[in-house]
Length: 302
Image 1 (cartoon, rainbow, N blue to C red):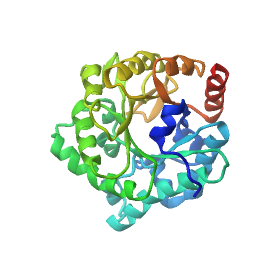
Image 2: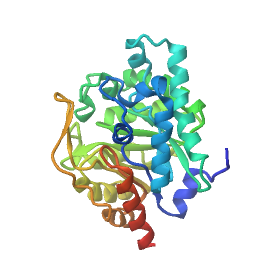
Image 3: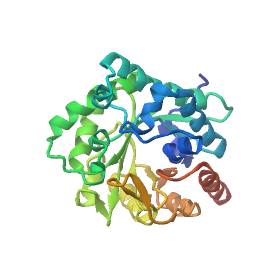
């Protein structure tokens, strides 16, 4: 493993390009993701495909790779008959595969271990609604075992991502305390509020005084929402912002398909960076070619 600077240090030096949607790249590689475990199924069935997808984003210009653990949970694996010990091994493998792709190039590349919301485990689209009826303590108990396993696998940062409400954000931050790895906190938003309808400034504020949080922002949202959210996150927390919206298409959980048109403009990355974003990329349906264009726009701006 080649040494790279700590992520917080790198963010202080400039903007880092994130990868795009892992699932769409896996589908482009011919993988079938019609499963409740989504990309996480391939951790057991075809890990080489996950490493290849990460490598495609490195070639595209990504310098931070987000692991395939978004929908990987002990509970989800248990429904497939996977025991706890094997589930922990597969969670750790998600970090190892991203690290292998990162170590295959001369450029500095960081690995972010994805920690998806409780709703991702349910696989019913509830991460876009939040308000599961669970307390902070209950959500913390759900998230902590997975966070501990992922942190022990040695990522550079934990991506607490696609968080739909403040209750889950508080639980995730508590669960990550003492894990020895920095985190970023990223909400999914709609109409200028969290998906649960909470004030976005108040949502960002829960991370403002947390020294373990290296960036705060949004992902898995309409790209038109990203600019205002970045500006607000930076203003409220005084921390670097992270932003990686969807293509602009909308996920239909009932039909398990995407609706609408592509609206992701890579040129917007310069505006996001000017507003305080230091981690910039794409989420669902944003492919390597788009990440290349995004990286190019930021390089041109520099």
